[in-house]
Amino acid sequence: MPILIRLAVAAAVLCAACGGRARPAERVVATAESPSDTAGLLRIRFARGTTSGILNDSLLAGEIRGYLIGAERGQVMMVHAITWPVRQGGAPPATARVRVYSAAGGGELTTPSEPGPLWSGRVTATGDFVVRVEATRPVAYTLAVQIPRRLSVDVADPTASITGTAPSRAPVDYIIEGRSGQTLAASVREADPASLHLYGLDDAGQLAPLAERRKLWAGTLPATQDYVISVVPVDEGARYELTVALR
Image 1 (cartoon, rainbow, N blue to C red):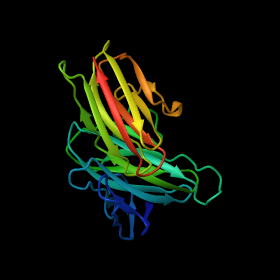
Image 2 (cartoon, helix red, strand yellow):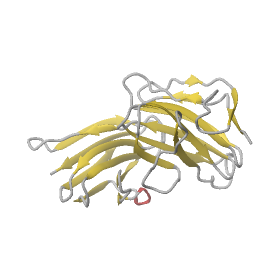
Image 3 (cartoon, rainbow, N blue to C red):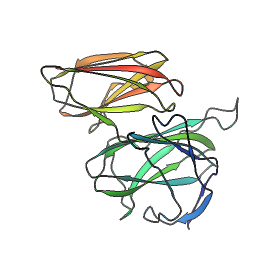
Image 4 (cartoon, rainbow, N blue to C red):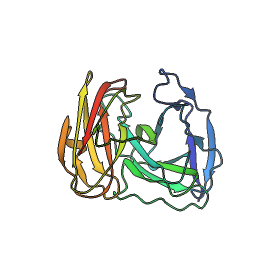
């Protein structure tokens, strides 16, 4: 049976550093029998010079909603679906689940972690991809799709420092390449409350788990791979300073 995909008129596309301006989404009704059926799907766009596309939407129980995103082969992509209570004072929201598919062939892209509200992985080819969000109970959510900024350090200057403002309550992600045995230190100093989430991209190994809400992590890297360093804000517009040292 076709899956009915209803795109709410209230959905809006926001991007980092766009000054809070939103591009409203038009109401679209479409059917999708497979991830390769992209007719009518809302395309997530990044504003020029930014690394993220962000929108707010909601689902009824059992609904699946699809979005279209373009990316290039080899890029790292992160997709977060952060859920909120549908009614003020209501029960805690159900966790949304995110999956990513090739729009050309319909094949699902692999990720090292179990399906959940966070999807991360490398894009397998240049083209369009379908991001699908689903939930078992009614949910409102913020969907953030990011191509994270890559951090680099050298022997002469092994420290990188970034100041920024979170465009939403979704994590702001960075990537750094590390080798087994190197020492990595990451810290967040915030003008507004924020914490760190640090994990391996290829093995999903948690160095600073999200639930621990750390401000600092330092230790020896267990494997050679890319590592994701996420700044997790408490509120939209949170200001932060991230410092990363790799030796």
